[in-house]
Image (cartoon, rainbow over all chains, first blue to last red):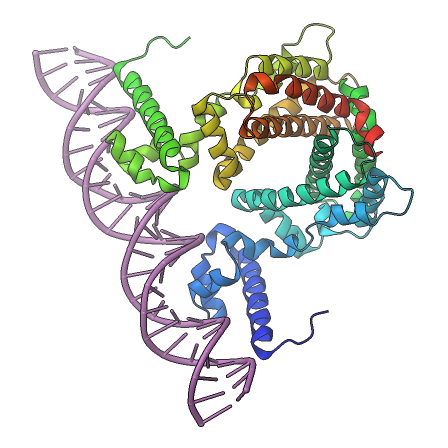
Length: 215
Length: 215
DNA sequence: ACAGAAAATGCAACCGGGTAACAAATCTTT
DNA sequence: AAAGATTTGTTACCCGGTTGCATTTTCTGT
């Protein structure tokens, strides 16, 4: 993929990685707000302006790995098997991520990842940044859904926007619920059946069950 | 409602109002990021710490009026007519807000309100704060929906959480779409039919149509 | 009416995130 | 090896937000 890496490029990659991993380590130790960017810069032996040349904001030090997941939902829709509906593809993909205990599903009891999720869901500024990331996710998913819409209705665009928002929202809620299960002391393995059931319920509600409950 | 207002209380109210309205005026003139809190404090002839005793953050200077709308969705659900479903109540309430050109629907072409909405949707920090407000809205709506759920299923709580999130998300998307219509130069009156149609579509999709489109 | 408690304000100094300017160091290219 | 472009460090600054303390203003009881 990325050959032709000169020395300069390699060094940059290393610095970036050192900044992010050192930052996360400090954040997990002391808490996000109890670590200043100056601390991180000092620990990596880099100046503050240099740190900000690598990461535009403090929050990105903690979140850039999550940011790498960006566009996943859109990709799932685009790469789905022929004949499969977008919702069906997203649903089965989510179940697969649950089985893999993917951190983005919230269903992971590894100590470090649990600590990270705790920090994420309890630090307002991190949550705010996460919202911005998922906002871009939503846009990409909107595009993907819009492409696949067979009806040329004038409202197709809005329908795609809305569907994308609902799907991203569903994933957010599912992840929060899973994180809570773990926070309550259950292991990921124990919570797995509930997590699958919640995902089923959620996708069912998207697919028409909402009306049955509150309609 | 609020009798027994001593002189002290009255003065506080006035200061609060002066801060907020002066701030919004300055924000609309120069842009949110181009006005410092020190500017606002100076314009009201108040010290910076005092300003922050009234508003916990700069964003709240611009948003506290919106914050006053808090809990509206939950209230609509709780106060709905006997025999009416929560979704039906919310749907008709939204249509009513559209007809009233309520700014929270995005469908308002008054110059000041339009400028305010433009600022709101284009200033990241304001949007982030708005998300936090709507987050509390979501929680309240969750409660309201949970109360009305007739099924005692173990999943009722999650279903309510999810439904609340989907409804708030729908309102957000509808408001954004309406704001865009106005930004494109249409008058509120011209855009009203489309806005109603979009709301219908949105609520229909919540009520089962999502599956028909992408299921 | 007045003293003193209680609350609100102002002042000044501070912290942390983020940026600008410019010079010094480092890598690349020929 | 030297010219050129990139990256870095230093310093100093701006802004949002907080703290401690002295001062003023309002409220309350007598």
